[in-house]
Length: 366
Image (cartoon, rainbow, N blue to C red):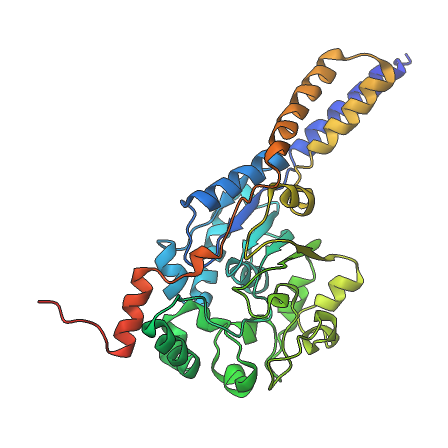
């Protein structure tokens, strides 16, 4: 017996719907320094990404959040996140990463170093110091900050600072490259910069990414230079000019597979207005959400097209239209910033206390 064409089409769509829903891709958010998952900005970002994309999102915390983001070495933070993603059954079929500033380096560490971890599909990087930064995170004004800045830069590659200050793992001073390569414990390994020690496994894992989205903020005054968000950086021995990512040795010699991904058109270099992490809803929808979309959302388009073509299944059409109302209402605030990470980079009291002790300026308690 021959089945009506409409019935066959409906069954096909139904089967496709079940298949796609069962293969939706969740995502994880990795926050930056001086932040934590419970903070309003990160919490709101995770919720908005979930609502707009239709995919389930999780913010993964490292230790107690703010404190450990400053003082736990990045290799240890990476190990913590690695163990978490391996234990999450929701991620076993693969997941996407949204990295915020320092969190991007932890995310890349998971991609490259995490043995037997679930596959990362898309990596969306907001203001990531991928090629390093030539300045410590902002302290503020005052004599303490001036002294601390000089001290940290002069002592940044000592074993003590490397073991006790997370940003030291990616501070790359162009005028001290030899010490950077010899003593910096995280970024040289992550970027496969060490001559004679380049690990092909890191490159192989990195090139498995389906998409690498690199978002740079045009007025970023936290990352120095801001082009580090694209893997651009200064030449060895000088603080100018900034070298385009495609002209760096990391790219031309393909140390981690960035060139391989770019040649396959899987790297997306994006520049948006705003300060460090100051992304608007409009830019988030345009540049982030498409890479987090729940695969089942594709079915809505198929169902809607089928409904319009045949003038039936009005219940599906009405349901689809209702779903479209929410984004249109939220578009009214599309220019409003979701995050503004610049302020979070000023040192909290706990960090200032640590620096005082480092300088021998800690006050004796009565």
